[in-house]
Image 1: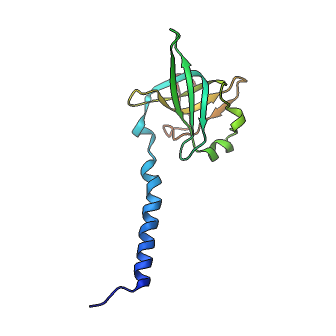
Image 2: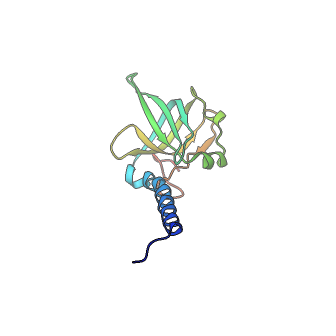
Image 3: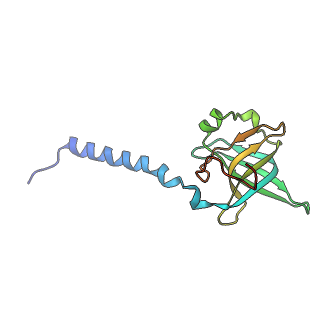
Length: 145
């Protein structure tokens, strides 16, 4: 009966380990439609409490004040850090304490999470949030084009 050489076992084991290591990020990533609802656009005005520059999606955490004075803490999913930087974002452009306007789409489960499309800064600059979005290049969010 033929036996497997140490080389064959090493190559097969390395290939399997590589496959497992590279498949984890694919499982963690999701399509827009899996979590967010294109029929539930949101426009949120709030104060940044934290910005997470992480892959595969950056996150902006904002506190939104309701008309009754209560505050809701929202999480806004954005594109990866490298893509945001290429679109004009920097850590200095979105510091904690800055009031911003976010246009995007609410999570399907109704939680206080949204997929960000655009972020409008106090000086009027509009930054593309660059998350996965609906896939349409000129989405009409909350009646704005």
